[in-house]
Length: 356
Image (cartoon, rainbow, N blue to C red; front, side):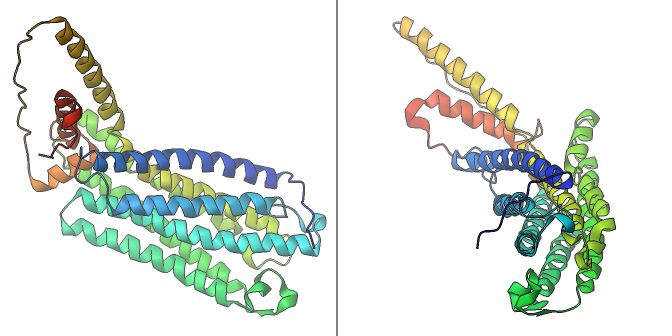
């Protein structure tokens, strides 16, 4: 039997609007990050242009999009609406969408947090920074998997999760207690991923006016922790007897905000050097085109050998950081620009160039 659609009002409209807006922004930014990093790899501009952090971000984006879809559709069947305006069928279907949102939210939380931690691990070879970052990954997995298992096994059969008439369920208060624990873990891991980059950037041999933007960019994840704190007052609605769907809409809204901020914070640093590389590539292409036209006008144009200045290399740790962050001087963007120039100077036959 078809379930009648609910006309979203108030909180439900806000939930839909925020989910659409943050979903589109996240897809654009993370999609650009994934495409750019893969482009660096396939064009051989940067050997380490693609890593596990990019895989995790890509799969995490899929889970985030799924969570957004469950949220938007669920809002049209009762999520964010008071019980007085819903019938039993609408409540059951809305609770089913909330259940699947919880699974998708757990998946993208694990993947995006792991992506950020792996990216930071790639920034340094010092193990004293690796240990807390691996703690972030393990704590996030535990904090999402354990509540997920509890939610799945709480009701028998599973469908009783959204339709109590189909079976029996345990005490929902355990979900509320676990949610508080997960929020605390999220805040701790977010701050860990925000503080470590500041320490790493302070050690780089780059001018102060370049350090500050890098610190801010790499520490944006701290704002995601504010979203975790913002949803805490609404966690009690997980076991509420009245207006459960209305209260859970607030939890879902903060989860969407938290996820979007985490994805954006994790994707902006890898994208930082994209404008410089693309601008230089365009400039090199234009110069090459102008040189080609001038050569056509000359009968015997003198051939000038192309000289490349050697790229200065510092300590191994700084090389890794500069390569991923794209800073001038020791950055991989410097190597990238040389490779772009070399590829353009060789013409069509020079596409298969090797990395220095």
